[in-house]
Image 1 (cartoon, rainbow, N blue to C red):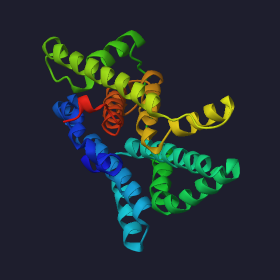
Image 2: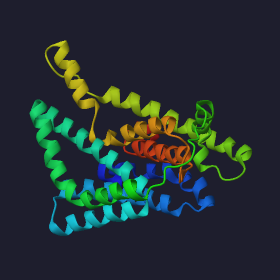
Image 3: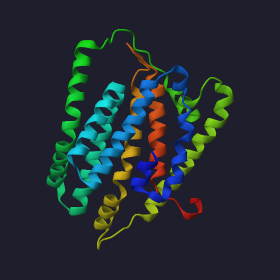
Image 4: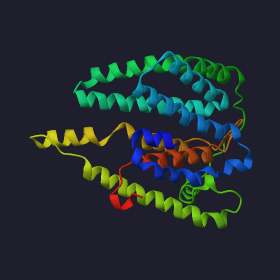
Length: 273
């Protein structure tokens, strides 16, 4: 996580500690080591992609990225599926930014997307094939769907239920404070972003266009992905066939990527260390 933060905002290394409370998750008590390993690998795959996109792709780097994605698939297929969503957001956001900066329009957007897919597909084609085979021939989807009521899901977000171990009543006192801390930092980050986004142009429409172009950057893939995870958190069943604790898994991932987005934001000097 610190390496990802260093890629975007080296001066914010201290904000990597935002994710520290999330390391002590409920899943450690239940032995979900494949899932937790998948979280580490999805961050490693993302870091390699960002690093190699910036520094250039070589044969050695392509092979390293290939084995990282393959390891992610074998660690946890669900995490690999989420990684594909994350990469789709990353490529789309990058294409939008490049098209906006060069005023290339939709043609430039499509060109950048296909250029990135050309680099990504060789690394994910085999895991995708294995995933399709698993879903079609090995996956057992029998069993009733169990959904957690939305009221309870709302409470879980407020108390950050995924990181609570055994004593909910005692631990939620502290986890709720962590939630409010993240919420307050988000408000400061959004205000600072809007306040620092320039309005350029001779007319009002041009000023609004320049503002919107500068508002969304590649750093925002983390909050966009967090919002996707939050959406899945509310619509997917908590239990389906052989898959269980889906709400808690998605909740944990939501807080990780929310914290990661905060860690790459620019904050006022009075918040710096």
